[in-house]
Length: 73
Image: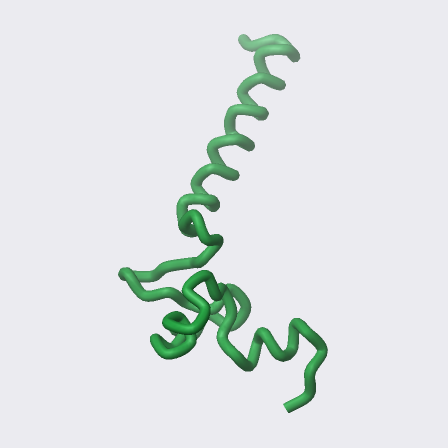
């Protein structure tokens, strides 16, 4: 039977593995990809190629970026 220190170590390892698995969904630019397509980190919709050509590191679509900046449509 594991003691309290062993249990704490197991809990910490599980926490680290969970954090790493969530991080795997993002690339070095902080973008989320689904089947090779960059999707908005807020709404989950694909980010248009035209936006990515202008801003290759974009992680939000135009609408969500405007909302994040407090701009009204």
